[in-house]
Image (cartoon, rainbow, N blue to C red; front, side, top):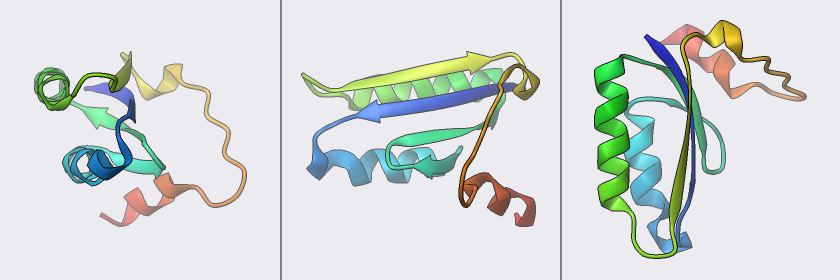
Length: 87
């Protein structure tokens, strides 16, 4: 498993398409930011699909860590990741 943070910047009217796709794999933590664990194969698939969805002037950033333990994460206020314990 790898830990990924994915951030996208797309046209406002296309945001729901990316939101719906990424929610299938990761936790939606803030506007256009998703994070969570994926298999290596799923990460490759997600990156390829996202790249194919992009139009000119849009971008996706994928941050990949070999483990969540490499990420120092501070949250102030409600943490969207807390919902994951109930899945």
